[in-house]
Image (tube, rainbow, N blue to C red; front, side, top):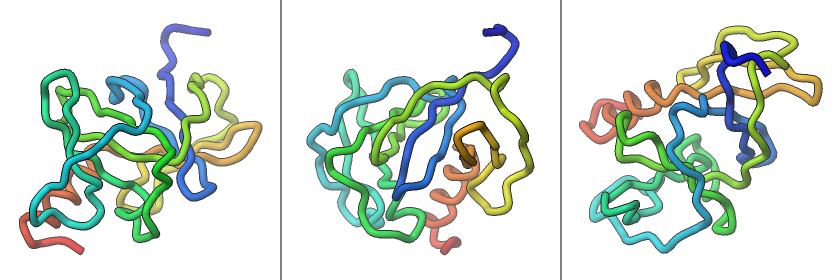
Length: 144
């Protein structure tokens, strides 16, 4: 594997495949108890203690307008330099290198950075920055 290629963490959400740049993910956790966040939008599952820091858990399935994600899924904790935020997903598939991409094209919605075509299908690479911008707009009363 060439060191010049980014690596992507591939996960599933409602039978669709998504990816995040591995550099944006600090850790993958098993489901852990969450504590409610008063007056937070419903798509926040709660808050967790992650190595001494409080981290909000975003249920991506609900955030994308669907039903709540599976409680038996995984928690993807974002790099602390990005945000104190974690994503609840259904399952983690694997880690792949960009060098295995057959094709890529720009995202066609607010949360997708790129559509990636691999030998086993298409994956939506999410933009953590766009998710954060959307969350900020919603919380400040400007979004959705």
